[in-house]
Length: 344
Ligand code: NAD
Image (cartoon, rainbow, N blue to C red):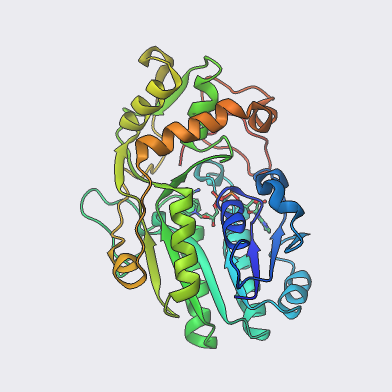
C-alpha cells in the first residue's frame, strides 16, 4: 500500500478515491495516471492536487512505455478506474470503448505483473451482468452485457481475471451499481437533470421512465474499493451496491422536489436500443467478508449533491456551455463535448 497508482484519478469516482486514500498513513505516494479526456479534470482533485504525496501524470493507460515506467518506479498497488464510462456515448463508438476499457486494461495488468505489483483492483460495474427483470446478480451470475459500454467492461473484467489466473497477478474486481455525488460529469442522469433543472430547463426520460437502477453514493463505493484493496482475496470479484433501487421516474421525482421544479419540466422520448430495464446486485459477499456497509441515505445524499451543484456552477457551467439540446440524441461521439447525452 505504500505507492498506489490510480488510473482515471481525475474522473468522478477516481478523484473521490484519491482524496480518500491519500489520507491513509500507510500510503506514502499516490500517482494519478489520467489522459484527461472530456471527462477528466484535475479540478476534481481540489487541493489534493497540490499535496506532496500526489504525483499527477498526464498519460494514456494504453501507452505501455508510460505505464511500465510508472510500475517500475515503486508502485506497490494499482486501482484501475480509467475508462470510457458513458453508455450513450458507447453507441456507435464501441471501438473507442473497447480500446480503452479492454486493451488499456491489458497493458496495465501486463505491466503490473512484470513489475511485481502486490495488489491490483480493477473497478468494474454491475452492468456487466446485463438486464435483470427480476432477482439480483451475485458474483457468480453469468455476464450478459448488452450495451457497448457494458460489453467493453465485461471484456475488461475477463482480461483482468485472466491475468490473475494465468500470471498469478494478485487482483480483485469490484462491480458497483450507479454512483452519484459531487462533481460527476453532467452527462449521467443525476448531474444532467440537476444542472438542467437548476437552470429552469426541461429534462427527458426514456420511454416511460420505468428503468430501474440501484444507487450508491460515491463515498460508499470508495470505502468499498479501499476495503477490497486492503483485504480482498486475490482472484475474487466483489459486488458493491447501495441500498436503494429506484425507477428513473422515482429518481426524477426526488430531483424535481429538491431542485424546486415540477413534472411540467419532464418530457418523454423513445427508448434507446437495448436500454437495460433493471440492474440489481447482491453485495452480501463484500458485507460478510470485508465489512462493506454503504451508509449514505439516498435522500440526504441527493440533497447534498444538489447543494454542491447549486454552490459550484463555475465547475459545471463551462461543460454545458455549448447548450443542451432539448431533444436528446441517441448517441454521442466519444470525442464530442457534452451535448445533452442521456442517462446510464
Ligand atoms: P469518468 O468518466 O468520470 O472518469 C474516467 C476517467 O478516466 C477520466 O478522468 C478520463 O480522463 C480517464 N480516462 C479515460 N480514458 C483514459 C485512458 N485511455 N487513459 C487514461 N485515462 C483515461 O468515470 P467514472 O464515473 O468516474 O467511472 C470510473 C470507473 O468506475 C470506470 O471504470 C467505470 O466503468 C466504473 N463505474 C462507474 C459507475 C458510475 O456510476 N459512474 C458505476 C460503476 C462502475
